[in-house]
Image (cartoon, rainbow over all chains, first blue to last red; front, side, top):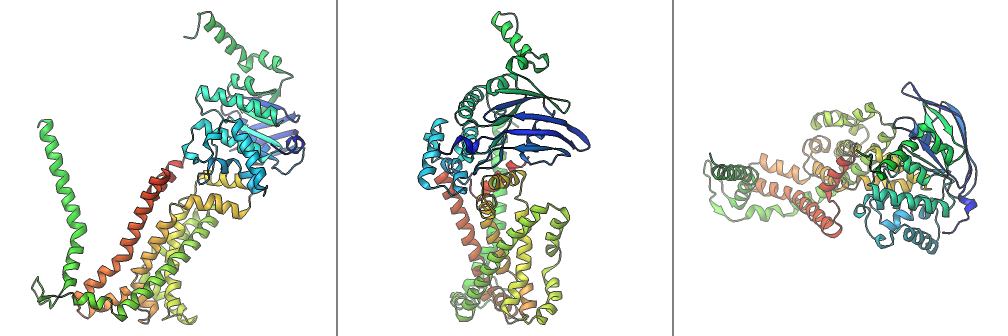
Length: 248
Length: 281
């Protein structure tokens, strides 16, 4: 994939972000910083404001107060929002969906073929290039949406529980692919999830939304050590399974 | 009643129902064909004096053929303009999302075409298009556009807006939005809209009579003249001719759907409509 990493990577600074939806405060004075090429996992239960945070950062919602700054430069969009709905173009083939952003930018054909081909191969979609989107499985659609997002070279990638609708096996595979490509292309990403295991699997830095406020953690150890994150319960559950004393 | 008896009863019931449907749908055409083939229909005989096909020879004569061609041209123009305008208007509406604006789209469809044409005739006369093809085209297009706008307004869904945002985020402009969101979303309805608006124009009598002032001769107008003149055979032949474009269009749509399913496995027109409904949350 061509395009320098400097082109894609961005850093994020959110200051004093607050928003009310339907008269109910959803985010209250959220402050966070994210260095480039990091993946911030934001953990939180359903309805805690995770998606609202991402939409505010993406500019899809206008906050009542606060600022969002994304540094970095490049030809791609400032941010790109991905969720469970891959939003693929059904009239285009798999390859054309992947190459969509390159086509929009008027990239030369040879480069389009090379860049899209490379990423489609990395994500195991090389045998599906000419297929229509509706012929793909849920996991393949998510991979394709991810490839399209990577080729768009956003400075900031916003992932809103993108794998929540997939089965456990596909989900694990998608997490692995995400980890690998996010590292390879030095993507700056916010990944929100309510799944503890997923958060540990994809994140490099960690945070949690509680009552509309954001709490950041210094490192993985501190995140795992906080009883509120649910990591301990998860570990205890698997320990109990291992010793044959739990799991129902 | 045992299960075999119930099954037999069901078969008989379905057969009776099918027979009823067949009779209701086919009988009018059978009668028209029968009427059109004979001449010398004396009251109250149910068979003609001669079966000679004279009405069919006259049906393709100069004035009828010219009226059919002119009517077809008018229908085509009305269909294309109405569909394009309807699509544009529905798109403007979708950007506002206003229920009141959508209500306005229905306004032309709430009045009787003949009454509206009577009211519009004065305006048409003032702008010197009364009694002309242009006047009839304009008035028919008002109805066609309203129909098309209402039809396309129903296509928009939350996913459409998000795909539009995505296209713009990925660097696309208005042309890309139309090419990759608006037109693909409307693809299933485009042939239906073209077909329906063309049919509205092709079969229109009220608007053409009032605004055309007798100087615009379509096949439908000729048909009513023949009925008034008592030419039963001729009217029957013209009636059958009137149904030809609709039947051809239906066959084409059916063939296109079958072809789409065979070649891509994708949905055809009806499948597209179904899928559109499934997408809605």
